[in-house]
Image 1 (cartoon, one colour):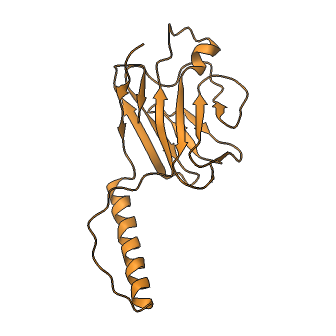
Image 2 (cartoon, one colour; image 1 turned 30 degrees about the horizontal axis):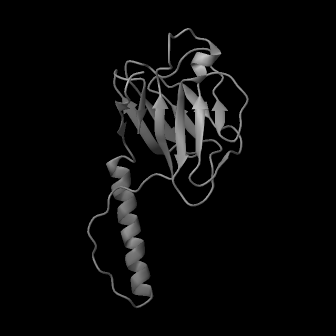
Image 3 (cartoon, rainbow, N blue to C red; image 1 turned 45 degrees about the vertical axis):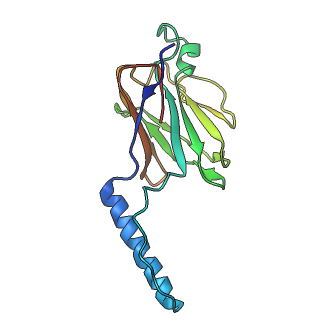
Length: 170
């Protein structure tokens, strides 16, 4: 087994993040004025952790790439709910650089702190395992990226990797 590759993460594009920050600062300032308080400047915060994060991608399933369903299902993306409340992933998408898209087509509730695994091959969906239903591999062993978008199409999280290893923690 190869050691995990180092993945990289990207949250919102900085222009979107800056716009959201300025709107939030304005709203907080208006609230402070409305209640007769004062606003104290704080140090800049780190980028907020997404509610749902890509936490692991197993892009090179063990053994030879035979295309068997067992081999396809050993290729997966793990998503983790990082919030203290349940999130409905209906209409959220996961895609790669080649635009292969998995969609949560119906209500799918991910509890706080729980994981869901999106497997490439075929299988019966459960509360913790979803199946893309593909007949060939999605994630490139030579380097690729996974992109998570919410139901509005907004980028929530991403993870990319190079050509070493078989999996990466994001």
